[in-house]
Image (cartoon, rainbow, N blue to C red; front, side, top):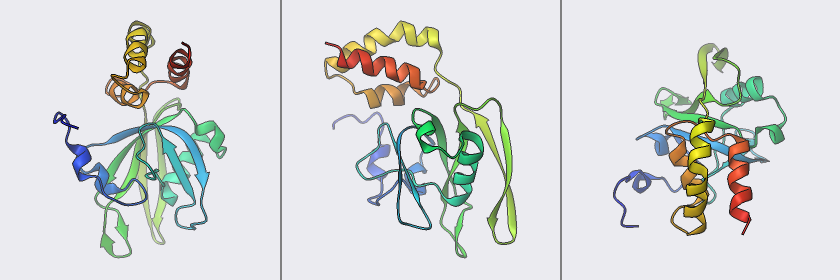
Length: 187
């Protein structure tokens, strides 16, 4: 609570989902832990992720869902363990007002950069470039995993914090996260 090395949590909104204003100071890399359907026609998907604050899932807009379907497929079970980089696009409009919105710039588990030309309104198309999200180097993981597990078991850091800190270098793969989870549970 006394840590002042990163104050970004002090501007988190109180909404029921991750929103564009939460990304005003920096992009966010999330690793999917689960997908849920909702009854909302505007936002029928909720994506849970490591490090998620309570009741603050990512709810992708229609355009971003199309990109996710094109790149990862329509089976949400296959998205678990995959990662994406989210950013705030201040040009996004709600009606006629520029409100800002969340866009995806990078995805893990894609072979190469992808370009999608999608409808963003009834009469307007926009090109979206999705880059391949780099993964955490296996050699570095092998070198650091034991220390991370020890620190987690000692209560000095959480798995969510390890995943977030590692993302500065590259996203941990689902296999790497699985290894950490197995070792953490082993006593």
